[in-house]
Length: 337
Image (tube, rainbow, N blue to C red; front, side):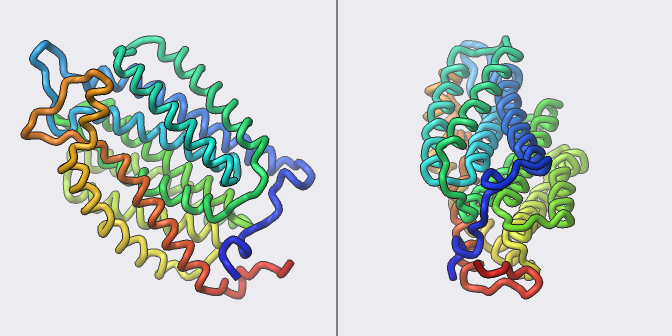
């Protein structure tokens, strides 16, 4: 029996609408709305703080740290729309296409140096994501727990990466607050996706996941300056977050194999992908499209948050294959249909 067969369960929408169903919908839509509002703040408040000024201005390493944060929020809102649509294949494709359009709007606002109207933009973004989520949910037909688990792993990896975002000086208060806030948001998205995928929700495991969402705040507070300790802490946090979302989604008690897989896959994928982004200067085209000063030839222009997408997708597929090859433990075995 494959993972899809094990995890396919009747969605709450097919049964009577109770308070738990309503509460779940409110939480999902609230996370989507917060993601949209954070993106708007990133466009109008954080981005102007990060752009070099003057006719001879140029970028340095990590100059465009605000781009990392607002794109982290953008990834969060896209993932939340997928979660709200239950991972349905057609809905996921529609959300992905909408995400690319949203990215185009992001670059357009960056290009015209939008630095005002935060409230208006936030309200418009919230309305857009809520309407979009409702639209894709309306024509979603099949709940795909496997897709939801992969969504959770992408969010978990993105949470860890955005938590270690740096700037040329690392003294900006907005950098630390924004990094912690977006990291916590993405961790919350990971937990929400796992809960959405779970056939039966374990409140204890969800509580542990919710507690883990505070880790980005703790890491930025304990290590405000870049250090090996902060990187190692973010790595450990990401592994733990992956373990708990798998435990929630699959109701498994064998946490050690999942931890080992995550601990090995993360660095094995992160190192070559990060090196590739540095060599290819993947941030340069986006910097040019936004009409921002280019980075000096001796420095890097990268968008590290985008690395979370392939890492999370590959890690999710590996964990799904691992789950398909192992029987559920006796206490968690679902009744046959």
